[in-house]
Image 1: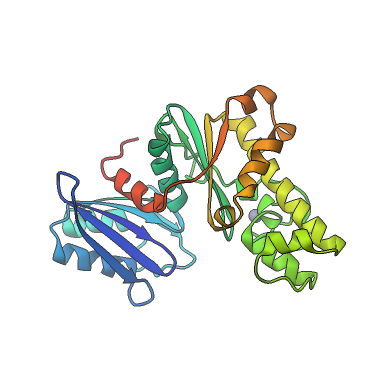
Image 2: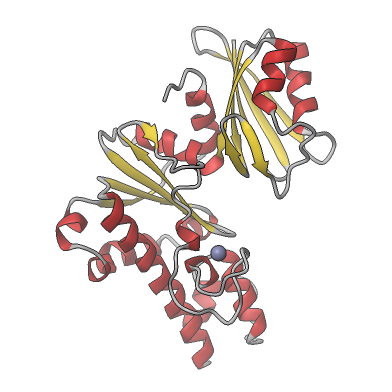
Length: 282
Ligand SMILES: [Zn+2]
């Protein structure tokens, strides 16, 4: 029996499958009420689970949780903990890397692909011939912190030159607030309609930041496919058209021609990816 778990900032979702991969249970837990360890142990008390895959909203490496901004963690050595105490095999990956594994399979990719997500931040994950490309410490693909241009508001990491400081949901909110533009709801659409030159600048930097990010990824990774997802992209699907129409100005022409850019079609890519972690081998 296996469990696929999506551990987000506010909720834990779990799906339990039997050995024929038939779904036999779904659980939904609030992370505010309990930590991740306790939540998983409550699943083990209910089902004879032997294998767990976790999609995690934070940084992880080698079965260890390195940083978790929003989830209560009582035991960072989570993989060792469940093996030592319960003899359960557990694999844990960052949520975007899990989503990328699921997208790779969904789109039938054969070589290199990238999943890029714009929500609060701007992240990306690279899959190379079916395997997660990690870099030295599993931080490869942090495209949001690649350099772009100076932003008046610093990035969450403290730097002012990050792409994410110009192109992310949080950058939009903070820059609009900083310049007192009075825009609150449909941020990108309202920026387009504003006559304030600052609004135009924030919008232009957002679009250009996206193109810089995708251009850099295409030039360095030579992917067959880039899948765009995340809350900001899904609310503004015109960004996928903009990327397709304009990214060639920002990257190598030959590599651009070999890359398709599409909108994510998967509703629960991190959870689907968590299931793929059960049995995933490097
Ligand atoms: Zn940054």
